Image 1: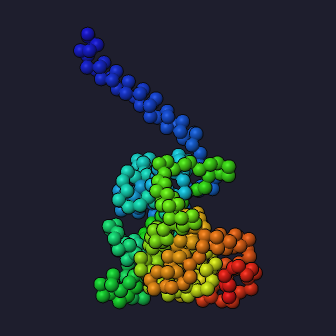
Image 2: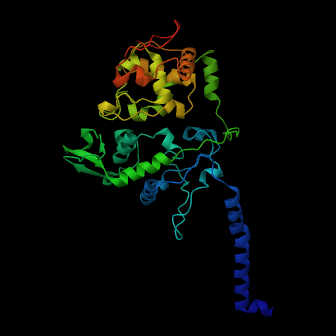
Image 3: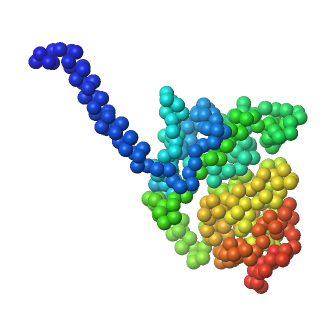
Length: 364
């Protein structure tokens, strides 16, 4: 009883037990994990610019609305090609001794997950415009604007990055919007967020609780039915080319009435969706990333997107089939068809010497 009445012994014993338990329950497992979890081959440390961007991301509270963890449930499949694993975070270290802002996995998704946003939306033009005012690109967005990351100038200097902001968002200002170094650093960090492929032979973790309803609906509609092209367009294309297909003047070209979209060379569109397009850079448009290749879109999904684009907003071109798209995909991979940049430089379909058989659509 004397031990219980001696507060010095009682508190020292409690503190000692707490420290021992902390070591075995928290510290030792953490050290063990550090030794076991190795970075994936191909993963790399953030550059100096990307690290500055990460600090800006933290300072502006982005982690409050965005996660960086793809859970192993099917609803998260839109955010990455596979569920996140411990190795994805192995190279991330503390900011410094006092601040542990290593991983920014987050706890709430008011906005989309950013684990693989560098692949999903790696365009510098899109990210800068979205930071200046998200409503320019996504009218329903509730994300705050970050105009303080930009400055307005009447005569931008050579080398400065000008953001193509529509006049209605400039409140009568007649000059140009220029990205500051902070804005460029933040975008560099966002562009660095990419899932690293697992080593060859390593199976990707599976997404659980898959929703089979869409497949059942397709089967019920008849064999060979394509996925919903409007939904696929909304998921992969609408953020740049807009719901009305008119794009954003000076930033993202219009698909409405486009000679490439509605032309007699659908194989070109397959290459653009899969591998991207740089043919209109000289007009001030940024290079389009290869959305289809990054998202591993199937021939059926690409066909559905193409048919939506070729028959919407007043476009009245013929539709394509999954079989045709698969054939063009195989020929593009084999080098039997010209790339979009070769066949349609500057947005104009040119004559080519492509070797195609009579079953193919003429790309001339």
